[in-house]
Image: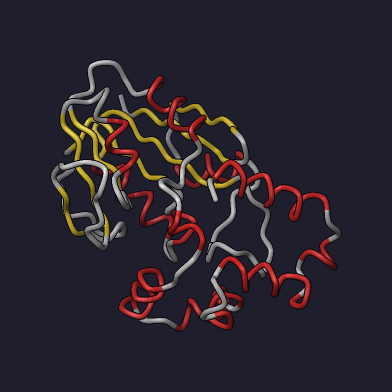
Length: 230
């Protein structure tokens, strides 16, 4: 189920239904059952309550072992977002790091623009590109300051407990440009994506990142943020 379709479904559920129905356990249960393939439903439905009690190891284990329909798609990005980012990567960029790189699909696309690309994640799962991979936690990235011309991070910071620390690390290792994609999503207790943070309004994301030179656009249910350090 690709991101464009799931964003459209999320819009209908989140924006068109009264909150009393939208955030009702019994209404949302069938959606969770389908999305999580009938497994780990209690953890999934009450993740926002459980997350603060988890150790780092438990937190990582849940994300690595929870099976969802999202695991079946090639990328978490819409094709529109991919096209837009490729068009707006800064001219002359020689290196790019993708944090939370997953299977490497975005890196394979970015490599058409940038000669040197690398991925960073908690688990090596690259399938679509053969490039340097680094094990690392987004809250403590294993790179020097300004190590890469461009740093990208897609559909990741909304999952991170200390998302401001994560953003600080992304800014630290980016020399010239930072590209972040997050869902344009309202807060509800029952959300299918294990998100802890929500950026329904552009100002919420802009304030969290804190760069003075930026653009931030809404595309098909996502925010695409381009920040510039030079």
